[in-house]
Image (cartoon, rainbow, N blue to C red; front, side, top):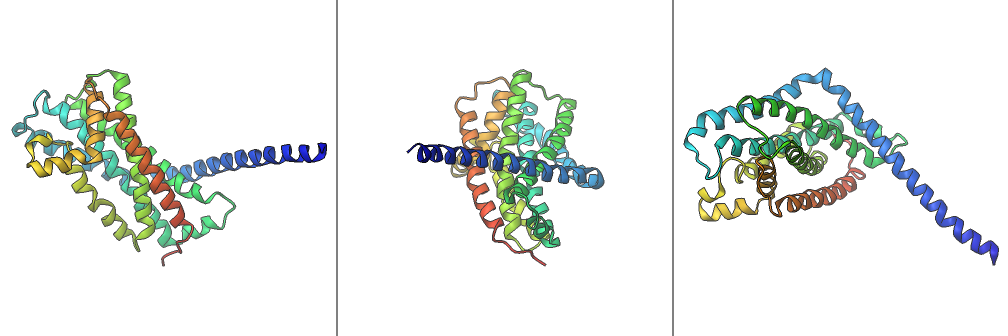
Length: 277
Protein backbone atom coordinates (compact mmCIF):
# COMPACT_ATOMS: atom_id res chain seq x y z
CA UNK A 1 0.00 0.00 0.00
CA UNK A 2 2.79 2.36 0.97
CA UNK A 3 4.87 1.46 -2.10
CA UNK A 4 1.98 2.06 -4.49
CA UNK A 5 1.17 5.38 -2.83
CA UNK A 6 4.81 6.46 -3.09
CA UNK A 7 4.95 5.46 -6.77
CA UNK A 8 1.76 7.39 -7.48
CA UNK A 9 3.25 10.45 -5.80
CA UNK A 10 6.60 10.23 -7.60
CA UNK A 11 5.11 9.80 -11.08
CA UNK A 12 3.31 13.18 -11.21
CA UNK A 13 6.39 14.84 -9.73
CA UNK A 14 8.53 13.42 -12.52
CA UNK A 15 5.99 14.53 -15.12
CA UNK A 16 6.06 18.07 -13.77
CA UNK A 17 9.87 18.03 -13.79
CA UNK A 18 9.98 16.85 -17.42
CA UNK A 19 7.39 19.46 -18.39
CA UNK A 20 9.37 22.26 -16.72
CA UNK A 21 12.58 21.03 -18.33
CA UNK A 22 10.86 20.94 -21.73
CA UNK A 23 9.58 24.51 -21.40
CA UNK A 24 12.99 25.79 -20.28
CA UNK A 25 14.70 23.98 -23.16
CA UNK A 26 12.19 25.33 -25.67
CA UNK A 27 12.71 28.89 -24.41
CA UNK A 28 16.49 28.48 -24.54
CA UNK A 29 16.34 27.07 -28.07
CA UNK A 30 14.01 29.89 -29.14
CA UNK A 31 16.42 32.54 -27.87
CA UNK A 32 19.38 30.86 -29.58
CA UNK A 33 17.43 30.85 -32.84
CA UNK A 34 16.44 34.49 -32.33
CA UNK A 35 20.05 35.59 -31.78
CA UNK A 36 21.06 33.76 -34.97
CA UNK A 37 18.74 36.02 -36.97
CA UNK A 38 19.77 39.14 -35.05
CA UNK A 39 23.45 38.55 -35.83
CA UNK A 40 22.62 38.77 -39.53
CA UNK A 41 21.35 42.36 -39.26
CA UNK A 42 24.78 44.08 -39.27
CA UNK A 43 25.75 42.04 -42.34
CA UNK A 44 22.48 42.85 -44.11
CA UNK A 45 21.97 46.45 -42.98
CA UNK A 46 20.50 47.51 -46.34
CA UNK A 47 17.35 45.49 -45.59
CA UNK A 48 16.86 47.39 -42.34
CA UNK A 49 17.57 50.71 -44.06
CA UNK A 50 15.00 50.16 -46.80
CA UNK A 51 12.45 48.90 -44.27
CA UNK A 52 12.89 52.21 -42.43
CA UNK A 53 12.81 54.43 -45.52
CA UNK A 54 9.33 53.29 -46.56
CA UNK A 55 7.49 54.60 -43.46
CA UNK A 56 9.51 57.84 -43.64
CA UNK A 57 8.22 58.27 -47.19
CA UNK A 58 4.67 57.78 -45.91
CA UNK A 59 5.27 60.46 -43.27
CA UNK A 60 6.48 62.96 -45.88
CA UNK A 61 3.66 62.07 -48.26
CA UNK A 62 0.78 62.35 -45.80
CA UNK A 63 2.18 65.08 -43.56
CA UNK A 64 3.43 67.49 -46.20
CA UNK A 65 1.56 66.55 -49.38
CA UNK A 66 -1.91 65.56 -48.16
CA UNK A 67 -1.82 66.94 -44.61
CA UNK A 68 -2.83 70.46 -45.56
CA UNK A 69 -6.12 69.27 -47.04
CA UNK A 70 -7.04 66.78 -44.28
CA UNK A 71 -8.87 68.01 -41.20
CA UNK A 72 -9.54 65.78 -38.19
CA UNK A 73 -11.92 67.23 -35.56
CA UNK A 74 -10.18 67.58 -32.20
CA UNK A 75 -6.69 66.76 -33.48
CA UNK A 76 -3.81 68.44 -35.21
CA UNK A 77 -3.13 66.18 -38.18
CA UNK A 78 0.40 65.50 -36.95
CA UNK A 79 -0.85 64.02 -33.67
CA UNK A 80 -3.51 62.04 -35.52
CA UNK A 81 -1.27 60.79 -38.32
CA UNK A 82 1.81 59.55 -36.50
CA UNK A 83 0.13 56.80 -34.42
CA UNK A 84 -1.33 55.50 -37.70
CA UNK A 85 2.11 55.55 -39.32
CA UNK A 86 3.57 53.77 -36.29
CA UNK A 87 0.89 51.07 -36.49
CA UNK A 88 1.36 50.60 -40.23
CA UNK A 89 5.15 50.47 -39.88
CA UNK A 90 5.25 47.69 -37.30
CA UNK A 91 2.56 45.64 -39.07
CA UNK A 92 4.38 45.96 -42.39
CA UNK A 93 7.57 44.95 -40.57
CA UNK A 94 5.97 41.62 -39.69
CA UNK A 95 6.14 40.66 -43.39
CA UNK A 96 9.85 39.93 -43.02
CA UNK A 97 8.94 36.87 -40.96
CA UNK A 98 7.25 35.22 -43.93
CA UNK A 99 9.99 36.24 -46.33
CA UNK A 100 12.72 34.93 -44.03
CA UNK A 101 11.00 31.59 -43.47
CA UNK A 102 10.36 31.17 -47.20
CA UNK A 103 14.05 31.85 -47.86
CA UNK A 104 15.16 29.32 -45.24
CA UNK A 105 12.76 26.76 -46.73
CA UNK A 106 14.05 27.34 -50.24
CA UNK A 107 17.68 27.02 -49.18
CA UNK A 108 17.00 23.82 -47.23
CA UNK A 109 18.10 25.39 -43.97
CA UNK A 110 14.87 24.38 -42.24
CA UNK A 111 15.67 20.70 -42.80
CA UNK A 112 19.06 21.17 -41.16
CA UNK A 113 17.36 22.70 -38.13
CA UNK A 114 14.91 19.80 -37.99
CA UNK A 115 17.81 17.36 -37.76
CA UNK A 116 19.09 19.05 -34.58
CA UNK A 117 17.96 17.99 -31.09
CA UNK A 118 16.02 21.21 -30.49
CA UNK A 119 12.40 22.12 -29.97
CA UNK A 120 10.65 22.33 -33.35
CA UNK A 121 8.54 25.29 -32.24
CA UNK A 122 11.73 27.16 -31.28
CA UNK A 123 12.56 27.68 -34.95
CA UNK A 124 9.36 29.68 -35.43
CA UNK A 125 9.32 31.38 -32.04
CA UNK A 126 12.92 32.50 -32.52
CA UNK A 127 12.11 33.92 -35.94
CA UNK A 128 9.05 35.86 -34.74
CA UNK A 129 10.88 37.20 -31.68
CA UNK A 130 13.92 38.33 -33.68
CA UNK A 131 11.73 40.08 -36.24
CA UNK A 132 9.87 41.85 -33.44
CA UNK A 133 13.18 43.08 -32.02
CA UNK A 134 14.18 44.27 -35.50
CA UNK A 135 10.79 45.99 -35.70
CA UNK A 136 11.69 47.84 -32.51
CA UNK A 137 14.81 49.23 -34.17
CA UNK A 138 12.73 50.50 -37.10
CA UNK A 139 10.22 51.96 -34.67
CA UNK A 140 12.95 53.84 -32.79
CA UNK A 141 14.05 55.50 -36.04
CA UNK A 142 10.44 56.35 -36.88
CA UNK A 143 9.95 57.86 -33.43
CA UNK A 144 12.97 60.11 -33.93
CA UNK A 145 11.52 61.29 -37.26
CA UNK A 146 8.13 61.86 -35.63
CA UNK A 147 9.63 64.03 -32.88
CA UNK A 148 11.62 65.95 -35.50
CA UNK A 149 8.39 67.00 -37.26
CA UNK A 150 6.62 67.96 -34.04
CA UNK A 151 4.91 64.83 -32.72
CA UNK A 152 4.79 64.58 -28.92
CA UNK A 153 3.66 62.14 -26.23
CA UNK A 154 0.84 64.39 -25.04
CA UNK A 155 -0.34 61.62 -22.72
CA UNK A 156 3.03 61.38 -20.99
CA UNK A 157 5.94 58.97 -21.22
CA UNK A 158 4.27 55.99 -19.54
CA UNK A 159 1.23 56.15 -21.81
CA UNK A 160 3.55 56.53 -24.78
CA UNK A 161 5.44 53.39 -23.77
CA UNK A 162 2.14 51.54 -23.25
CA UNK A 163 0.92 52.56 -26.72
CA UNK A 164 4.18 51.41 -28.29
CA UNK A 165 4.03 48.07 -26.47
CA UNK A 166 0.46 47.59 -27.68
CA UNK A 167 1.44 48.16 -31.31
CA UNK A 168 4.42 45.80 -31.03
CA UNK A 169 2.20 43.10 -29.49
CA UNK A 170 -0.21 43.53 -32.39
CA UNK A 171 2.66 43.31 -34.88
CA UNK A 172 3.98 40.17 -33.16
CA UNK A 173 0.59 38.54 -33.67
CA UNK A 174 0.76 39.36 -37.37
CA UNK A 175 4.22 37.80 -37.56
CA UNK A 176 2.53 34.45 -37.01
CA UNK A 177 0.20 35.08 -39.94
CA UNK A 178 3.24 35.91 -42.05
CA UNK A 179 5.02 32.79 -40.80
CA UNK A 180 2.14 30.65 -42.03
CA UNK A 181 2.29 32.41 -45.39
CA UNK A 182 6.05 31.79 -45.60
CA UNK A 183 5.52 28.08 -45.03
CA UNK A 184 2.62 27.88 -47.50
CA UNK A 185 3.98 29.60 -50.61
CA UNK A 186 6.53 28.15 -53.02
CA UNK A 187 9.11 30.93 -53.29
CA UNK A 188 10.54 34.01 -51.58
CA UNK A 189 8.99 36.20 -54.28
CA UNK A 190 5.56 34.73 -53.58
CA UNK A 191 6.04 35.26 -49.85
CA UNK A 192 6.88 38.91 -50.49
CA UNK A 193 3.78 39.45 -52.61
CA UNK A 194 1.41 37.40 -50.46
CA UNK A 195 2.72 38.99 -47.30
CA UNK A 196 2.02 42.57 -48.39
CA UNK A 197 -0.97 42.37 -50.72
CA UNK A 198 -3.57 41.95 -47.97
CA UNK A 199 -1.94 44.42 -45.58
CA UNK A 200 -2.41 47.42 -47.88
CA UNK A 201 -6.23 47.35 -47.82
CA UNK A 202 -6.19 46.44 -44.13
CA UNK A 203 -4.07 49.47 -43.17
CA UNK A 204 -5.58 51.98 -45.59
CA UNK A 205 -9.23 51.02 -45.01
CA UNK A 206 -8.87 52.03 -41.38
CA UNK A 207 -8.54 55.06 -39.15
CA UNK A 208 -4.76 55.20 -39.64
CA UNK A 209 -4.74 58.23 -41.95
CA UNK A 210 -8.27 59.67 -41.98
CA UNK A 211 -11.37 59.66 -39.81
CA UNK A 212 -13.57 56.74 -40.83
CA UNK A 213 -16.58 59.08 -40.65
CA UNK A 214 -15.28 60.76 -43.83
CA UNK A 215 -15.58 57.50 -45.80
CA UNK A 216 -18.69 56.29 -47.62
CA UNK A 217 -21.07 54.75 -45.08
CA UNK A 218 -20.51 51.14 -46.13
CA UNK A 219 -16.73 51.55 -46.24
CA UNK A 220 -16.70 53.32 -42.89
CA UNK A 221 -18.44 50.33 -41.32
CA UNK A 222 -15.81 48.02 -42.78
CA UNK A 223 -13.03 50.28 -41.46
CA UNK A 224 -14.59 50.47 -37.99
CA UNK A 225 -14.78 46.66 -37.83
CA UNK A 226 -11.13 46.34 -38.87
CA UNK A 227 -8.99 45.17 -35.90
CA UNK A 228 -6.19 47.38 -37.21
CA UNK A 229 -8.49 50.39 -36.63
CA UNK A 230 -9.07 49.20 -33.07
CA UNK A 231 -5.34 48.94 -32.33
CA UNK A 232 -4.61 52.27 -34.00
CA UNK A 233 -7.37 54.07 -32.09
CA UNK A 234 -6.18 52.58 -28.79
CA UNK A 235 -2.58 53.65 -29.42
CA UNK A 236 -3.66 57.10 -30.64
CA UNK A 237 -5.70 57.70 -27.48
CA UNK A 238 -2.77 56.69 -25.27
CA UNK A 239 -0.24 58.80 -27.17
CA UNK A 240 -2.53 61.84 -27.00
CA UNK A 241 -3.60 61.45 -23.39
CA UNK A 242 -7.23 60.65 -24.16
CA UNK A 243 -9.57 58.04 -22.76
CA UNK A 244 -9.16 54.88 -24.87
CA UNK A 245 -12.30 53.28 -23.42
CA UNK A 246 -12.25 49.53 -23.96
CA UNK A 247 -10.17 49.71 -27.13
CA UNK A 248 -6.89 48.79 -25.38
CA UNK A 249 -8.25 45.54 -23.94
CA UNK A 250 -10.07 44.70 -27.15
CA UNK A 251 -6.90 45.25 -29.18
CA UNK A 252 -4.91 43.07 -26.77
CA UNK A 253 -7.55 40.33 -27.04
CA UNK A 254 -7.29 40.49 -30.84
CA UNK A 255 -3.49 40.24 -30.60
CA UNK A 256 -3.67 37.30 -28.19
CA UNK A 257 -6.32 35.50 -30.26
CA UNK A 258 -4.42 35.92 -33.53
CA UNK A 259 -1.18 34.75 -31.88
CA UNK A 260 -2.73 31.61 -30.38
CA UNK A 261 -4.65 30.58 -33.51
CA UNK A 262 -1.92 31.23 -36.05
CA UNK A 263 0.91 29.93 -33.85
CA UNK A 264 -0.99 26.64 -33.60
CA UNK A 265 -1.65 26.49 -37.35
CA UNK A 266 1.91 27.50 -38.23
CA UNK A 267 3.63 25.03 -35.89
CA UNK A 268 1.37 22.22 -37.14
CA UNK A 269 2.19 23.06 -40.75
CA UNK A 270 5.88 23.38 -39.97
CA UNK A 271 6.06 19.80 -38.75
CA UNK A 272 4.63 18.47 -42.04
CA UNK A 273 6.13 20.81 -44.66
CA UNK A 274 8.98 19.57 -46.82
CA UNK A 275 11.83 21.63 -48.17
CA UNK A 276 11.19 23.47 -51.46
CA UNK A 277 13.94 23.28 -53.99
